[in-house]
Length: 346
Image (cartoon, one colour):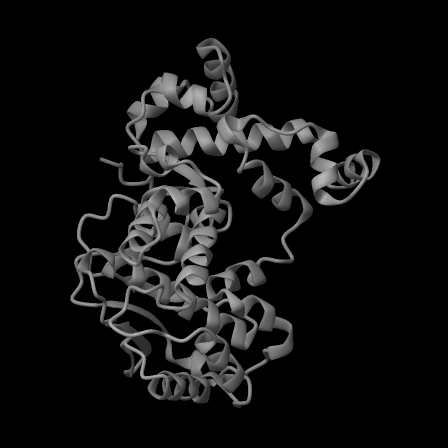
């Protein structure tokens, strides 16, 4: 069973996380299977092997969350991914944003979103409750298979949070995110998606934020976000499209299997620049390719140790180390302690 994550800051979970467990990707594959997309074909489309998807306590680069969603979206032509009792027609989320962009503030925008869902006859089950200090948005989706309820709720809460932030061009600090599932084995994935306190075993799935945010003006330019709304989960990509140069490289390297990183020349080609330009930009950031590779290996190693029960030899291999001694030296340099000692501390 996956471990509860370390109690680190919220920022480290959300902004710096490069990897997620394979739990959500596996759930996506089963949704696909339920609507006629063979799991082997699903794996081929997203660029993973079925073994990677089914690996006990496996981890994958975080971009596979969007890849998986997009694959099912294209296959089902349904923003509910074929999991609902009725379809959510493609373009519904885009229509929500387009309608809300015409409003004065977020309070009016929420009313526009509710109206679009009503017209679409959606079974998303979104309810907004405003009390003395908080706005609570609850999700009660009507799904065909209860196995997929938690994933669908998580996705729609994530998309909803992104939509609201995009509308006011400001990250909305959530007071909390509640989920009805019990004993989630991939708590770290929820922490990546939601930068706020998280709780499970709740009567319903909901997010909440300060009531004063309702008066925030709508600043979104629909034409600028339109392309991202073709795949609603890509709004996260829009929010972070101004990521610094170093972060872009880290995200790219996180996709390297077993930390077998590309050469500088290969990286430069992928980024659309010469090696000299790459080196100059790295120097401007007071950084080096070696340092960045080191950071990615460190993140992957600590993620495995914090969130899985894989033994240290397996972790070393997954992080690109052929010798345990080399891994131990590197890990000690990163954290000030050995992998075995780190394991005991968590």
